[in-house]
Length: 499
Image 1 (tube, rainbow, N blue to C red):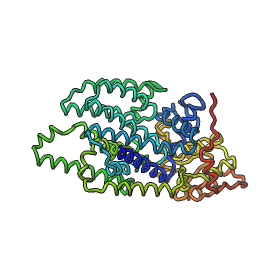
Image 2 (cartoon, rainbow, N blue to C red):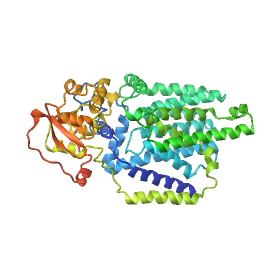
Image 3 (cartoon, helix red, strand yellow):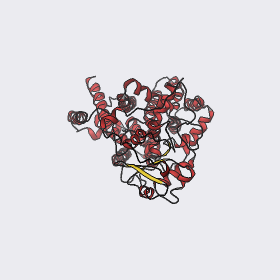
Image 4 (cartoon, rainbow, N blue to C red):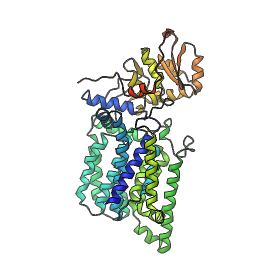
């Protein structure tokens, strides 16, 4: 029992240390907080956008429940609430993964080094406090746990929990499609395993049927289908692991991916040497193979999906790698990882990251301090931060809710402007802004400094603030440069809801 407690304490400390190393807050957090505020303060789910000056459609918020949880934790625990969630969600995910491994092997799967490798590979996409898809990884592990419990002798009636959890997952994050896919994979795998599959068919049918239980009904299910299949060529995290954008990055995950593949192939080779290919195939768990192959494919095709593979490996592969760690001094590993984690926690301030090179904090403060009003164009990733800080004085062009709120044309024009491609200034005439924020390392920054009808009125370390020339007054207050000011005012907003 003492070893088990030590294992989980060490895992929790490791995740907390990673949380403190996060380089910046997730760009979409601000839109999530606004959505959560609408429910908690306003008493209703926001189904219409009010933050933008551009054309919008019905706001199909596939993360509204996550926003409620984020805002509730912020209200209850202040800044620390975000850190708590960022630590708790990955911990619970991997806690459940260890329980799955125990069900599958009957052993105590507390090999810290194995789960450490799974964790650091997943953390490539998990340590930006706090992201909605953390809930999907947690539900994914929970679905595997229930499915494995039933496969290993639990009452099949336990599967009734999956449609119930689907309702919850569906209203927290659109990643619920991964849960439906998982049930489908178990169905296919058990067909190949020559096991009864009726319960999987019924469970999948019931889980699909309850998708309509949401604030938008059937229309949301149509949106979810569209969002799941839509192309996102301009969004970095939806590009492939080996795409030009990510070819030199995600090295830890790539090593992990190839390492697991090599270990599994090595184990298959050993098994074939001892018996025939037919016998190895017959004994192989087809469910495990299918889930690992599908999640590996998803990770390779879209880097946003890579934690699904890490969770799957943590659930299914513990017994396959034990031989690698037989001669490793377990006590030394605990000492090393605990020392590294405690040192990190000791030297880092327990606070949310403030990254002035990523976020235009001083530039937004300049706009706010000088009471500048009008339509504001910022790169879509920063849109929700701008609206959180500047509404109602300023309405944004667009933000990260691109598929939830905006027509496809807007992101194309946004990309063309900030990348200075083709008719880069089309957006200025089609959806004219009054204020523009631009990073000073982009070519469009120089183009706008020479653009007739525009004037740069403030130059921060990273961003410049441009306004229409006819708005210029020549008398502007400089923003505060004190870090403590921005730390205290981080979640201040003028957005108000009333019941």
